[in-house]
Image 1 (tube, helix red, strand yellow):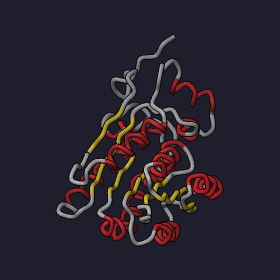
Image 2 (cartoon, helix red, strand yellow):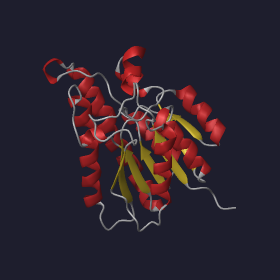
Image 3 (cartoon, one colour):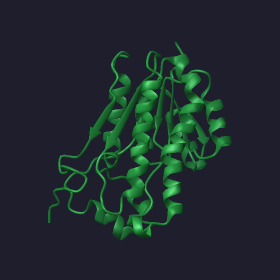
Length: 247
């Protein structure tokens, strides 16, 4: 039996990353599950017969260890590590939180991609970066997060131009309102009431599994088909700021 192709998923300890790791394993990949929380990725890896790697994408040493664990051939990279911190207006925003968002979302994506490019070339691989509809439309208090996600999008577009002619596909998947266990809770520093209010009254927000399905579809298309950008919203959401909320 031939060896399974390797997929690397960052931010795999929860949410979209965890769901994408599970779905990729069911699609036949040997998944390298990377995240800062070592115990959680180790447990996930054990459940899906993958490899768990503790990795902070802002750490050069961690990213180097991730590349070593992934090996010389990587068929799929899912750049998912990142997230939002705060909902502060620009005039009062703590810049340290903005720096952290930019480093984890944008620079982390670049660092991991750089480290894995030789292995992706060897496998004629696919790079999928989880951005956000926040890259398209900003909103009050969202300047820092929107800027970080827009940066990820521009970086993906630049990479596609730079690698044109090489056998590597590059896709940006941009989710809308997606309810996961930690995204909003992390954004609001553990404030459960503020986190729950994000999804209040929304009939069916997207789930992590919905986005994992999108990752699977993009990765599973014939290799000559490149989905540059896939924008995905729940039916209840028309734009970042127009959402049907039921009483």
